[in-house]
Image 1 (cartoon, rainbow, N blue to C red):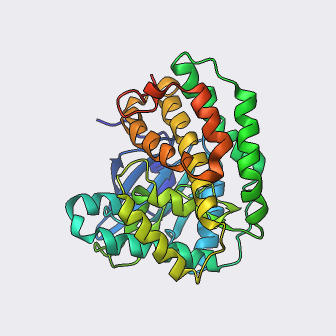
Image 2 (cartoon, one colour):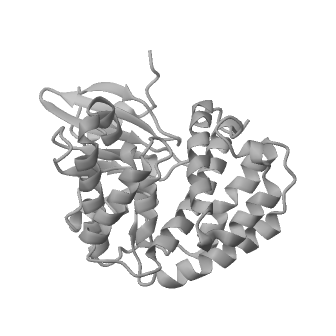
Image 3 (cartoon, rainbow, N blue to C red):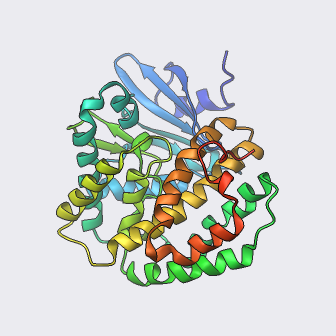
Length: 328
């Protein structure tokens, strides 16, 4: 039987949900835990994000901004942020990824709806969030040299790695002002199909790390998904759909898309390795070959020249293939 966190029942009592049935749900790559609470015909989602590892205040801040701007985040029903408790509207079980596993014929309309929602977000003024600045991009990219490279016993030139990213990211940063709200983890596992069909409104979850940055970031997060194969043909079609839904993009957009794709995929390789080595979560290792394949595609873009040359000089080819790319 799953051990419930201390204080859960008391929080539900204070939230006027006493006596509800409590069902634990699978967690994510964090210290957060989730529970579905049911009382009669009413259901809600309970998140436990306990300090010091977690802080639900950013989630609450972003959720309120999204809902105030007609974006579909879960409504907040009750919260005690200092203790890590948040009770929200329940979006159900139809994650976009799970739905498409059983309904592959709905892939195009599901992605069209997700891209259209992203374009709608980008038409809004940027939210009251911190900037996605160079220091943040660099810190994320460095996860590859901090975790993946040591896992394979590689002694790499970390200073040259940072310099290469500085060179390729500088024009991206200069072009992202005034910026858009970037949810930072916008992919098929974090999009809920609220009506149980691909064409229905889509709910947003896992957005607590939102920043103000480049419109290509969440798009590449969706279309170069670490957890789900997206065919290059579908990626290209959805890029065109975004251009149409956004009313056009500038000439540098595709270069920035590739650059941010490479930055994000390098970060994810590092994060998935860290999840295994530090947090004892080896299941993410199986996704690393997919991420490496996406990273290689991005590195082929001319805008990534300095970073691509660093990879060629520092990462052996046999570690950049489907069979050799696991972080140990």
